[in-house]
Length: 118
Image 1 (cartoon, rainbow, N blue to C red):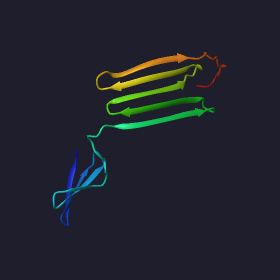
Image 2: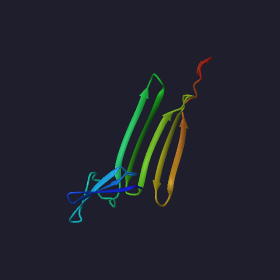
Image 3: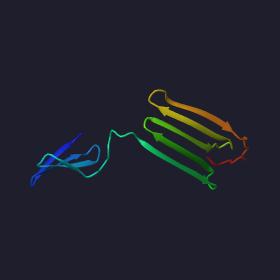
Image 4: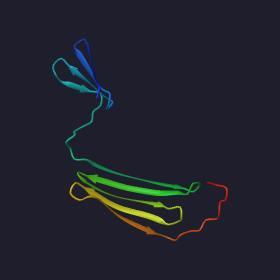
C-alpha cells in the first residue's frame, strides 16, 4: 500500500491508493475523510432483489437476498438452455458456512438444429 504525505498550510494529505481513500490529518490530530464509510463495527443489514426476462436472448433469471448481521438468506433461479428451471435456496452464517439446496424442474425442451451456428 502506498502512503503519500504532502504538507500544505498545516494540513497533511494521506492517499491510500490501494483503496481509493483519501483523508486529511488536521493540526489538532482529528481526521476528515473524503468518504464516510459509517460504523465498521455495526452489523451488516441489507436486502436486494432483481429479475431479468429477455425474450430475445432467452435470459430468464431472478435473485433475492437479505442479510441480518452474520446471517444471509437468499434464493435465485434461472432458466437453463434445455428449458428446465434451476432454483437454488441458500443460507450462510459464521457457524454453518454456506449451505444450498438446488431444485431442478420443468420439462426438457428440444430445440431445432442450428447447423453452422456456434
